[in-house]
Image (cartoon, rainbow, N blue to C red; front, top):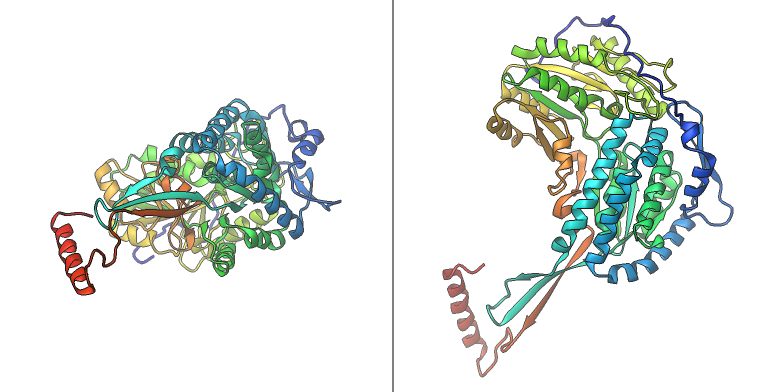
Length: 544
């Protein structure tokens, strides 16, 4: 990060007050996620015989949450057999019939959102407002593809080889059965949100959600079946990733994966070995740029959302903040003030600004990145502490200053509530620093000059760029593609590409009157001369 500086007293820890606790909520995880609820949802797991049970815990309390049947590789094969049989009839339905299921799901989801908000909070530990982001995203995807799928999938007339004589049509055919591996951090949106376009395109899905958040995916499956999806079209298998994941990829006609870059490479290699397509949304080390003319108050509020939503456990969250030197001190003071005021809590109600981390592993990574940075000379401007008084996996939202290239937190994805701040003097410096990463998922630019913001956004090497917003503007624009560049993945969700990836293109060309070969007494020489004249004429008449 040449010419980018991170000022501050090195090696010290700010003695700011602790983040306040959010008001307590009467409803608890145990009262909302009862054994009866778990037992009902567990019936949706494809697991034969007398399966072993796998146990999950509630991040907010550390108590056992659910015991679920564990699938085996043989169960995965059964799941594909069931899905393939169901897909034949489902794929034969008119696309508008399939789209109607998505629109009914949309309405059911919004009507019964409190059920899934409880599940998301119980399984991930996130604040309820951040859980609601998933409801919004899934509803947007259902509405978009419910309305637009007939247009995306309709037959399209294409220019034929010879005008008038050749009629060409591009058709879209379902892949068959999609293998989907979805992560724990956004268990509703990244399971059903990605599956909806696959379903409306005529596919069935075998989904392996992360075991920690399987209840949310199982609830979504239950709701989609209620909306009209044939039950066997969505198979859910649960098990250890290194065991069940390869089995899901092994039988898939297409693979949709969201997770780490390391695992994504393995999935891509296995899919490539079978000549099967894959879309991969992977990690990120996302940057936010605050230009000299930015509205500082709005940028501060945007930074809070960008860095600490879902406790930073969001692929498109911001972990690097580049602020113009002329406004850096004012920005940092207000940002630290707002960060220290965030209310931490885990009640099943609105009112918390940030929840907990999801696992001990995430807490260890956050703690290691902060401690190593401080030991190497960085300063904790805000936060920097675990909060076991609130729950076993709570950690304060943290701002680091004085971070250098040698520190792990500078380049590695933390995936937690930690952001490093850097100062820049020119926009060229900021762009170069923001792009100095193998990742390329999301970025954010803050300026009062929208034309300038869009021009700078075009220079950033990321799949999405938000101008004067953190991440929601681009992600929520579901008619536009979303995905990563570089080590952040392949392919896109949302928009046309988000549904067409689940299809095969088929060209049907019909030739009339004359063949594309010598005929009607023409020999090879005269045929070649005639076609040469015709090709020149087509170019002259600007035929495409």
